Amino acid sequence: MSIGDSVTLRAGERADSVVAIMGSATSEGEVRKDVVSVLGSTRVTGPVGHDVVSVMGNVYINNTVGHD
Image (cartoon, rainbow, N blue to C red; front, side, top):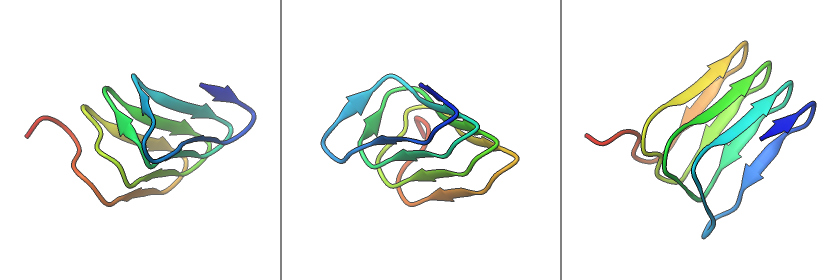
C-alpha cells in the first residue's frame, strides 16, 4: 500500500493486494486479492484473484481477473 505515491508489483513477485491512494497501482506479478487505486490509474498485466478498481482514474487489464 502506498499513500501519495505510485506502487508497482514487479513480474515474478506476489502480493495479497496492491493499493495506491493518490497514486497509480501497477501489477505485473500475481495478486491474490485486489488491485486498487484512488485518484490514480490501475494497470494490470499479471493475474488478479478478485477485483481491479480505479476511483478517479483509468483501468488497463491484460490478464485474468477473478476466479472465472
